[in-house]
Image (cartoon, rainbow, N blue to C red):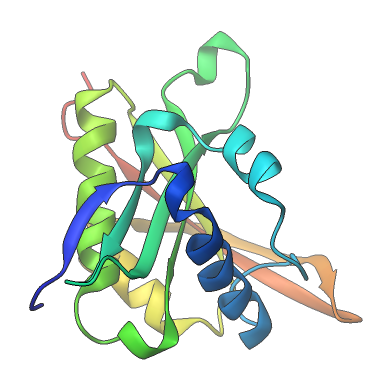
Length: 165
């Protein structure tokens, strides 16, 4: 992966981050969402210490990863749900793995014991990426929601911290 730098996701990256998000949405196998949120909603939903961008040598956003709390209940304080998106032109270069590695490092340092996500089964590249990064499949939620009028399944994946005692 040449000339790619992982950095904190900041407001200055907002326009490019949301464009990468919308590109993933438009492909149809990344999320139930149909439109990227505005920056205010995105920013509010993501934990500040657990969001990163991959930047090329010119500072262009190649991808992003971010996590949000799954619940405000104290029992779930160490559980986050994440998303990772890579610009279509930057795929196959290790960008997503570098982003996931940065997220894993930040969550380990921050006392997070579980990172989870739901992935459409058709998104085989994402499932393989997560497996390589130490995530395991928990199960499949069948026909959990409608997407463009079609019932979709979601594969639940999680990574449990090896520091969990």
